[in-house]
Image (tube, rainbow, N blue to C red; front, top):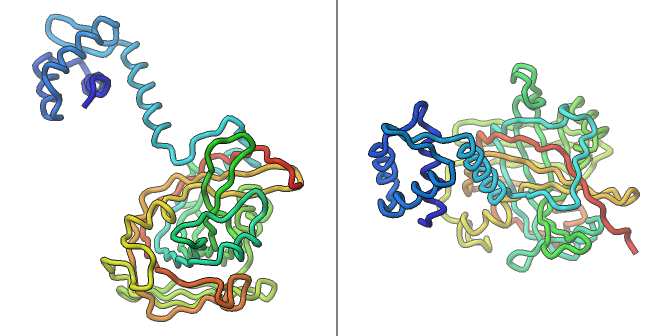
Length: 348
């Protein structure tokens, strides 16, 4: 552990004390954290000399400057761990401030992971998005979920909305003009919900246009470890029927046909995807909706029966897609950040 980390540990320990800590008590806490005594003493002397820690005869306590230092360090750690850091060109643009910063919880969800032909998927993506390639394939996840108590943050769950949703999320990337790194996330090539109000509101708000919701009758039925799902889309959204029966008991290894060697290998490319992208080519904007969520705690499960019409007769059908694996997710809280956008170059 570095001296910087030792200083942070001292500030954190003192922040937990209501009326300061005795010197021996502080060093005992640091010893339990496996911090070297010599480094701890040197770090404490430095913090005192900088006015970040006040030392009296009987105790040590944070000063206001020490509190500011600790808060700044916490902010820096959060920024370093942020899965979607703000870009220099990003600007907030919620269409209805507050209303569209929502929270919800996935009660039951399945992720059907399809390896697809990169050229076929590229034809479905608006510029400047392009497929993200893993293991030689592009990827589309069919995410069927039961959402509970969706509501603006700060509103009691009593007033939340419960509904089903299915989304076809493509793993994509793009790079802004002048940017050195690719930005990765998901683009929804198709989505349906069974809730007419959510569909009506969603198709009028910028934040929901990542889905372009269609209407469908849906059900998710659990009988012990067996989970049955069904999607019957409306006539104008033909081609999206889904029927599946899954044994949700965890399987320790991927199925034999999967290209992934483990769940850990799959997580970074397909699970740790926190941004959804929407493109407004007419106005020249890329919209970025970031989801902060609890860990998926996903696990491989076996489909006993499965039919997904989109990969049979749709644009990714006729041999352009292959089911790789199925994940089951349960009890996962979601929270949306305010919508952001950035300028994109016009298509040539």
